[in-house]
Length: 167
Ligand code: SF4
Image (cartoon, rainbow, N blue to C red; front, side, top):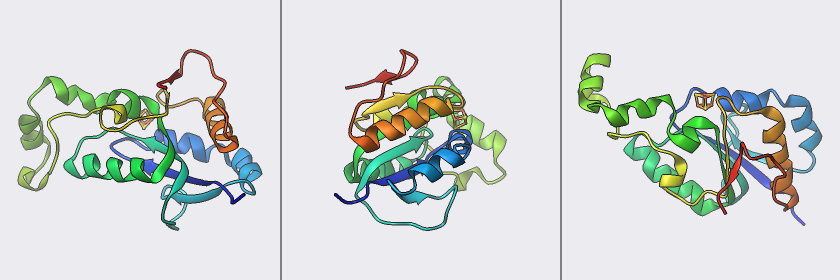
């Protein structure tokens, strides 16, 4: 059997959930022989093409480019896990959903005409099928490791109700 591949993807977010994964350095080293990290720009510039056995997705969908990119990642991923409040609920940036995004854009940016954004910030599950949602801001490192090791081993994660399986 070939070594499973892991992709870690960033959308609109603060990187805090990816930092939780980086904080699992010892556990990741233990996993190193069992998984090939194919994509994790926060940790390495190396990029390996898909398909991916497991994709961890941080962040919400808030730009037209992101809306397209998540479709490609879903198509290349056997299991897709949304990690953190941004990916599972839209994050703090979803406050725009209740306001005028054009007004925000004109107030925040000196040249708003160059900012390509959607009127809303939405959860990954509003765009593609998600196999598992791991909630938190940031996520809990022990829960993240359980999700990761479970899916890489081909089983369902064993977690309490704070994480919701969407299957
Ligand atoms: Fe950052 Fe919280 Fe979003 Fe994670 S869920 S990326 S910690 S804002």
